[in-house]
Image (cartoon, rainbow, N blue to C red; front, side, top):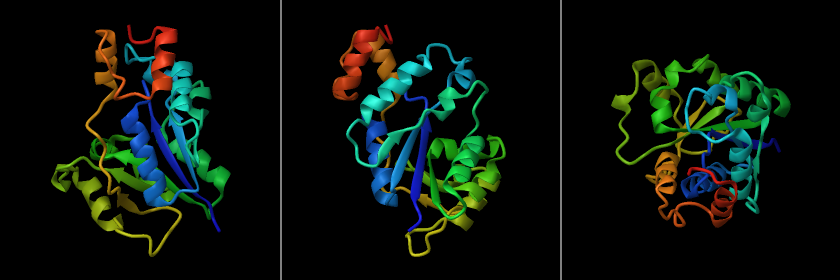
Length: 212
């Protein structure tokens, strides 16, 4: 049986409960044998003031999924010295897994709307399948024409014809309306986010004085 591997990337600053909820939904709905959480590296994000150093984000992501079955943290983008692009990470993963593996890339509806601006975006479909986490009220009319065409031609509703790449499948469970930006803002004001962030990560934030 060929492996079924998922790729879920992000800044994870900090990793929070909505990230964990989406990771579990992605793993379970797609039936992944392995889910790789890939924190973004520093070079690409140096223009974004206020984001935590990569080693902190990596540590928090590891704490957030500790003990979760079939979920692991991959530090490849953090180890790079050049800016990272999704197409390059997927190319690496495809090379490592081989041509027969089923590879899935998790993307949000907002990112889907901007997909045509990504580097070599159409190559993504030759490398992986896309799992799309949609917010309530998502309308395909908001997508650029070229992305909407891909959405309608590649979308599948079940797994009767599993394939290594090239399909799009919306996730049934939409993401919670929760953002890392809001959590950072609340923490900077001394607010309580214990219901939004795993306790192990909150301890880490306190020990390292993050988001003050």
